[in-house]
Length: 383
Image (cartoon, rainbow, N blue to C red; front, side, top):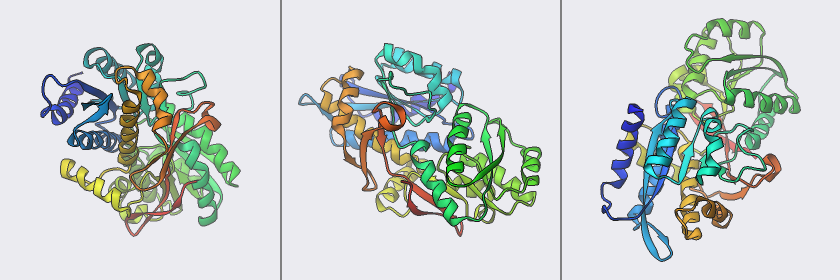
């Protein structure tokens, strides 16, 4: 917990230092992957929340029943581990008094799911396991369009633009990877691909040569890295190229092409297909990215955009509810906070019933990404 506290202290102080001690604040927690292979997602998501909150506070705070209230953000690192997520959740709820929490990893979300309703906490999550939300779930919301929404259209684009039809899946051996396997296997088959093999690996793994030797020997036309973290996908790709693999690659489970390029090299990553949460050429995204660079010193993962937009939606719902301490009333106000125009000028609506059995999702617009000449390029909408 020392590491968790250190991360939280930095985030809390950066946003709360200027607030008067007597101010009634609305507290938002973030349980994210702030260290390790998934940190590119975690840091970007957390900063998306913090920047949106900073903008609200700079405007005087959010208006609740005619009164301005400030907002605080507290960030904890779950290190992609369920036990750390439970510890962070309990601290946020029982010690910090947060009623609204963002989460990222499916394993972490599954670990805390059973406590959410009884604690009257509202969760906004980017975790994508099908087990997280069902028709009996109330206080958990998908904060963006999930692989269920964007994977089929991206694969359809690939079938029309890439050669061959034999696919091998190389996915992490965890809740996220297992769930993604079911989705992508069907989507590939529906598009006319043949999934000829699958390999699962541990998130902490670094040496993929034995695994890739088996993969390359099967002569696939495409290797998909699914929900692998960008740094890991880049590492696997580099080792695959070293073993002589020359065909297509994709990473359909999460954005992060710049991190893939950094790990694999531009030549190895050329032509790679993935999804993008943001169009790198969008001026509003570039402005948000500049705020991130000013704070962190590097270009953000595109996940910063859905977290930024989701925070805007949450704050609007808190205002509409008039009850910032009652997560259930804020949950009920979410449909009234939408539709909203996203940072990039696309519509965000409320839905999810068709895929999850309940309306509990912010439906966002994603992009089909293709690495060209060492740069990610949006080549179409994933819809």
